[in-house]
Image 1 (cartoon, one colour):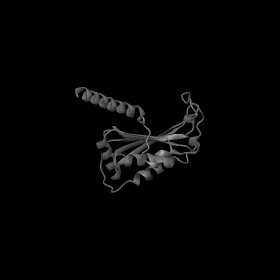
Image 2 (cartoon, one colour; image 1 turned 90 degrees about the vertical axis):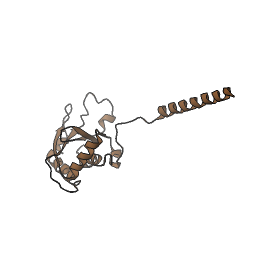
Image 3 (cartoon, rainbow, N blue to C red; image 1 turned 135 degrees about the vertical axis):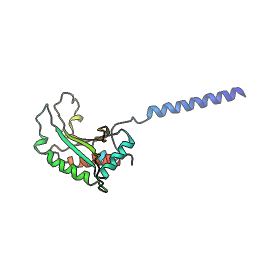
Image 4 (cartoon, rainbow, N blue to C red; image 1 turned 60 degrees about the vertical axis):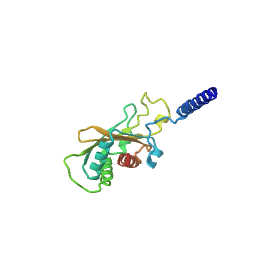
Length: 185
């Protein structure tokens, strides 16, 4: 009788351990790629939140209209820049400002501001680090960094755009901001 119980326990443990190993081996790898939102599924996108309380406070600051943003561009260095013949940062700043303001629920002025830094990166297809054709498929990406009042990064989002003249940059901006606004909600 003891032998049967011992065999049963042994087999049971092997099944449990084997099942755990099988699940671990066949588990889908964790990726930094974001797929929460429909707009994130259309292109390559990444998002990362750093502290849930800081993110909630930053989201509240945006809803109350307490934000400021700065922007810049990163032109290609190994190939002749083309994108910024079509895209003007001042025009994109207007789009960003309008998009951010669309999330204001009630303006409650405060000295504390959410600091938003964004930039537009032009894909440098002749960069020596670009070895695959896949890495040359996109035109560039937008990166948004949301920082708290202590200038600590609380959330970052990166969304590709595909059009070589930047016609889809507004969609990428919309998606990057929506990624922040909907994170952990």
